[in-house]
Length: 427
Image 1 (cartoon, rainbow, N blue to C red):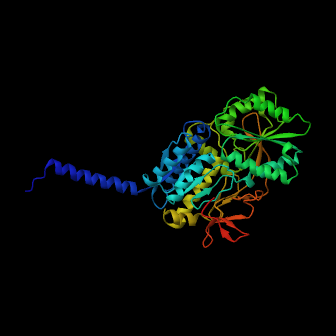
Image 2 (image 1 turned 120 degrees about the vertical axis):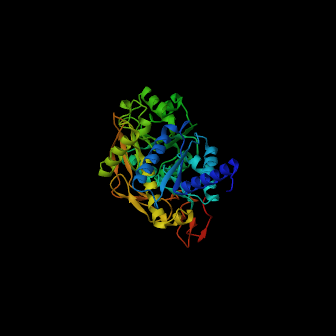
């Protein structure tokens, strides 16, 4: 009889248990959830983390994907833009995630972009952005400027607006979006004297002087509107100051690109009734699928008062597209899934269909909503069909000749149709 030492038994057990753990890990498919759960952007991003957990739970009840359960790896980059890149690298290299769902601000996406390109990962980005970018590794399920900003200006033009206050948080999205809007407005005959531009830091709280400037700018006898690209919790004191200074929607309407139901939940909305927001989804849209989504959301978070919003719908679309593409490819291999995603169609929550286009942007309806006293939006304008997202602006000299098409053989994010050359993988 061979005697086995306790040390040998322990080593054997360790090997077996280690193998079992490895096998268990292989039995799940991990996805990364990269959203700020603390800091100035937590007000907006926390709900996207919860949305993903709900979607994973729901998909796992259906059997997961490729016969495996999905496991969400949640990290908190804490509204710290360089930390987004560090966490993204860990998710891909250490946690071996099949895709990352995350970022809100463009500066956080710009931080992650070189990481996912270097490691050939996949990032689903669920928030409206400034355009002027196309990457093989990023799938943009939020709105491009032609799916939000430009239609918003067109709507206000029809309301007779002649003066434009462009007010935003000081980072890449508002600055680039306003560059596009300024060029668009000038193409319509407006001049510098018709356009006021102002930027403030993240988390800005003292809006007294800026609101006073807006009132003065709007007091010149021409109908004036504010186009707001203010992000995060700075929106709360901004809207409060508008109310404090008696700026009503009738006098100077505000149309926001980063304010939805979530942000309004922390504000007394009665003085804000009539102000606007441009999105591609509102909780108030009337569709059977939206009713089901809201019911599942309230049940999952165990809170009937938790609202839904546009980036949540974009997250819903992106997650379902990823599931469908993985099943189509029969693998979670990054390159195979990237190819499989092009052309994938899934329902949106408004009763239509979202399709991933060759430029890695999706088709979306454009909605403009008016703030109601209950913190919801009444839709006052909607496109007849969906709009294809455009990565490159038709109004900027360096962009108007560029197209993006990630299908082979072109496989280029910024192909110049005049020179017939590709400028590189992304720009």
